[in-house]
Image (tube, chains in turn yellow, purple):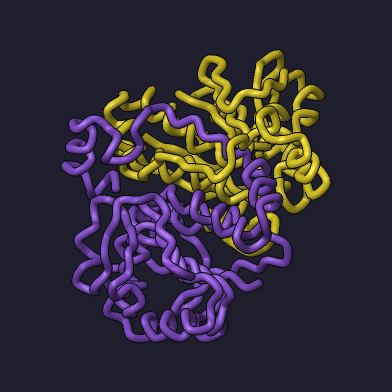
Length: 210
Length: 210
């Protein structure tokens, strides 16, 4: 099973690494980090670099596509090479997925027209120009298209995919393998459940916190 | 605030990237990925590479140390350059922390003698030879030393640290910023709460799942 994670400069690293950490544990899974140009891709803040080992053209028809988010998606939403790759890959994929603002690229490729989808809660406005219908859910499954909410939601999405791909024993095994028994320090990790003043705090510092 | 994450070949990527994603959002935080030799470091399965931008010697006294885990820790537990770096850095740090089997390196550096600490649940035996006292808790805080359980526990640990460093408003803001409102698909993400047959499934496939 070939799992492709396209990466790019100004990526949000956890969007990609959360699903990688889950899906790489599936039997016979091969996760590949791919890019328009192979090589080093830096996060939005410049502090971390991930390596893309392959060019998009070297993996045209993966079984699973996971598109991560980050500010870098804004430039790629107008990049025909990336969008063509997504369109072709989606025709052949078992699962076409995104995390956070990765859904902007699925939308820009025309894959979300009339489709319910999610993204980071601060970025719902990115989707309607492409006909996508933003919804405030953590993981949104519409046929073989699955979109996850902001950053950390990719772990939950990947565990759901793991169950679909290899069955519940494997998925639960992976969950226990990575000790995913979350104990977040605060109740309310979403804008719907967090206190209003925390949501405003995040909005005011969106460039830093989101 | 300088936050140092030492990385190495055969690292578990999420151990490092989870805390990075949280701590890099703190005000005036600078997260640096460092290594004995700067450059590309690959995960245990070879599928992902992270870049170390600095040598250990270039950041001898960070404010916060986060040591990730992975099979690569076994070789480093006998590496005097790494252990000397940890000893010196710990003398000056505000917080000395680990995720998963990263605690093996804190232990091998002599920092956990007589100290309660945790690691991945399959690897508790790594700690007692160095006098550390393994405990089955998700995040273990002993003075300025904080150890986290397997892989995904680094996110919870980092949010706790964020609260200590910058206060609860920032920490909660970061939690909402990364939409950390977990919805794991299975109840029981730890060996204490998962069904016995799932725990055995993971044990039998430990090289793949843990």
